[in-house]
Image 1 (cartoon, one colour):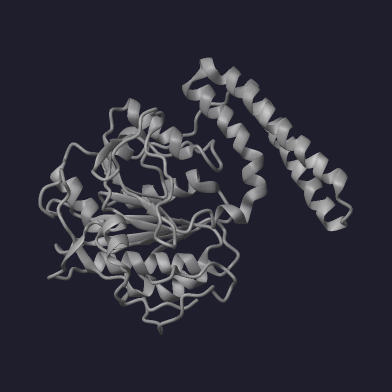
Image 2 (cartoon, one colour):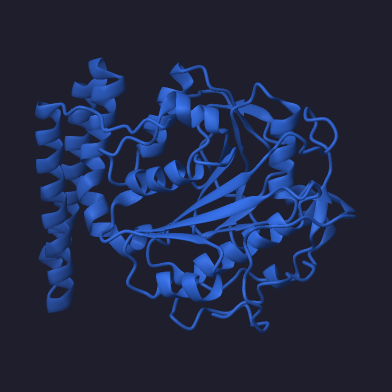
Length: 386
């Protein structure tokens, strides 16, 4: 799917949706900044599915209005003074067309920053086979592309990009390639950090392609709900889209590379909380998240590793509960295998039986890895940044 890389047109949605979902779009931008990222112009396209079969852009995305976000409730007037250089670290695996949309939105946001903040974009490609690296080289030559020879998973992939970003940038945006940044979001986040030097990072709401809110986690553990209409303190910024000061990464370190997929962000947030880092959820920092596009390309290995990573997390941070987690996860795996075997007994289709058999084998392998993890208690693999 080709995309116009220089300009997104105005999004026309009804007033109630705009008020409810995109509260910050009120006054027009009056100045333009510069960005290190330059994308090659392309022809406008429809909003259908991509030529390669991936998801298309959400309806109306070609008509997004690039308006300046208003001041935050606790952030004071929009101001990004004191931000020297901004970096984006984008992790991707076989999401070429979504990555193209993502990089266009990054370029648009950087170009529209009021204070001409220099920026750089680092794409970490976890051995994609869909032409991702070639697309980035051809269409976004200013992007710093890091291509891994194998799929290292999010923890190692993000660590590589963050280490590069910290050479000359602060703050750093960590984000997935299935994200499109909506207008004013980056400036809103920068302004919040500038107005609150004690805050180490910010994140915001994730929207579905139809502009409804996704259910997202903002805390490691919390029983009572929070008012999401105003900025609130969180302790789980995640890695889907978050802006983190360099000092937080230098204090906490990178993501624990013993995690392959899942829990690397939870582990980092747990360590950051214990290091007294401060994070806020900013409701006007809105992005569209297509969700799970990279994960579905590698689901077998992810499932096989998921239960092991859960046990590893509890053994690391809540060792007195690790035995209980093990029992509950054993029961969950047994329940899933039981259901799959019942389905297998009712199915005569050869292809379906083969798929079910593969799923059973994956859960058996997941249980084996989980049991092994509980016994061995390996040391964390956390890179520290100078």
